[in-house]
Structure formats: C-alpha cells, structure tokens
Image 1: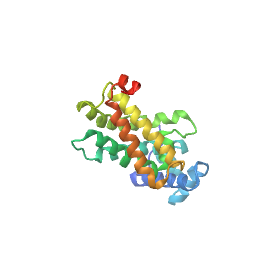
Image 2: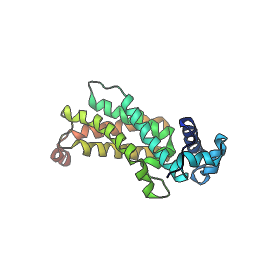
Image 3: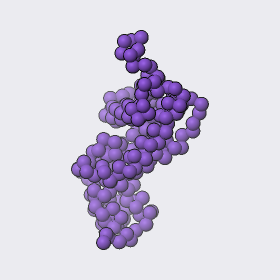
Amino acid sequence: MGRRRQHGALTALALLDAAEAILHETGPAALSVRAVARRVGASTRAVYSVYDSKEGLLVALGARAFDTLSAGVAALPTTDHPAADLVEAGVTVFRQFAIQHPWLFRIAIQHALPSAQLAGGFSGAAAEAFAGLIGRVSRLGEAGLLGPHTTEQAACAFHALCEGLAAMELRGNMPPVEGERVWRNALGALVAGFAVPLAGALSGE
C-alpha cells in the first residue's frame, strides 16, 4: 500500500513552486527534499507525502512543463491563417515558456534528469502537449500547406526547431533584442517550406 496523502493541492503547488525556484536560483545541486520543505516552511514529510522523493518532484516538474505548454497552445486563438497561427504558437507559447521556465525546459524537453527512466513519469503529459501541436499542424494539411509531409513529420520538425532555438537563446547565443525576430523568421521559413515539393526544394527550383 502506498503512503497515504496527507497534503492537498495547495501544498503540492507550493512545493513545486519552491523546487522550480531553487533550480532557477542555485541549480540542481541545491535541490533536495529538505531544501524544498524548508522553503515553504513545511517538514520533509510533506514532500514525501505528496511526491514520495526528490525524483518524484522532478517528474512532477516535467509534467508541469508539458501542462504549461498544453494550456498555452489551447489558449491561443485560431484565425483564417493556419501558418501564422502555428508560428505564433512557437513564438508566444514555446519561446515564452522556455524563457520564463528554463529549468522546466531542461527537465521536460532536454531530459536533464539523473535517470533517463524518470521521463517516463511525465510521458502522458508530453503526449497530450504533442497532441495539441498536432492539432495546430493538421490545419496546415487541411489548407493544403503541408506538401509531401505528414502531420506528424511536420510537427516533429516544428518541435525540433523550437527546441533548438530555445536552447540557443538560453545559452545566450541569441541577442535578447533579436530573439523574437529570429524565432519568427526561422519558424516562418520552416512552415512555408512544408508546402514546397521536396524535388523542387532540393534542386533549388
């Protein structure tokens, strides 16, 4: 029988907030059950009751990352321009998520975890977030803007470019004042390129 949960949603939220704050301020070496509990004025029993362990905290942070992305994409309005809508999802949702939550990005997207197996703990949240992206990309297909690409192929390419751009920006390899412009240009070029026949793209036609 698992440990009985003695703490509610507010405690769980406070503990996750504390864990993310510690990561942001001092990095993963400072993250511990004791440090998280101390930050919210609770005992370590509170952390163990809700998340079982430090690893459980990391899994919950990974799930929080994808939940944040899912909610952000779902909240974006849709227009009659699916390509522009998709670019907007990358710039205003993925980019802002990475900038505002760099450690959630590293944990969930880049799997900066002590064990690769921990990623399985938030795979459901990851799948839900990807489904939201698939929904946005599928609108390109409905508009005849995917060319020879499947929805899944295009979604993977879009995600990969977002991840790469975010990693560059977080490393400081992108001038802050140029960040949004770089993202829009790169994602716009990718999305426009989906509609180009592969033979023509390769030959430069």
